[in-house]
Length: 150
Ligand SMILES: [Zn+2]
Image (cartoon, rainbow, N blue to C red; front, side, top):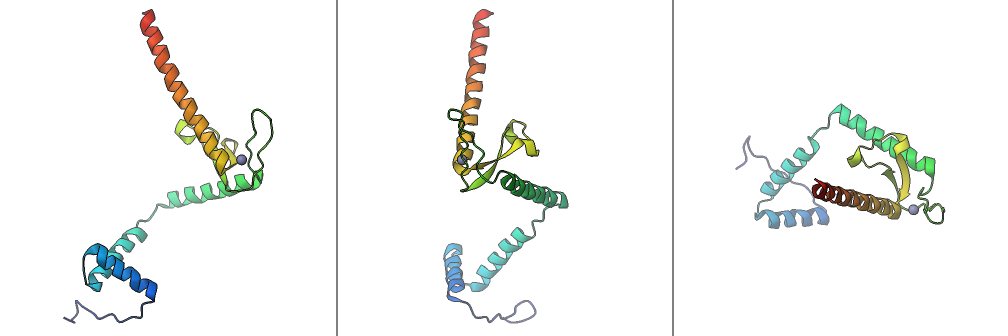
């Protein structure tokens, strides 16, 4: 069995690694550690060797810097209650929100980015979803109206 195509691997496995090996054997339906290792190596290599282009890397790091900047600039949630005029000012789970969503042509420009807490980020998304729904509703209504007129 041992020749230039096969080598023996002897190693100490911590209990957690041993458990993973056993779980993978179960999932892969094999008793062979070699088979599991080969599958695991293949999967990990595929993951690590999926290289992004320098441009993608640059875009990501700009996005990261922008996010950090927007949050540092605001310090707290920038949501202002339309009724009371009070700013939220929460410091928990701060996220960067696109004022005009990317799906609607919004950009990563600083004046389109604001800092919201998770709750208000979700609230803003709901409002936009609601607005989109209303736009669709209006379009359908207008089409029905023009259909009646013509
Ligand atoms: Zn908030």
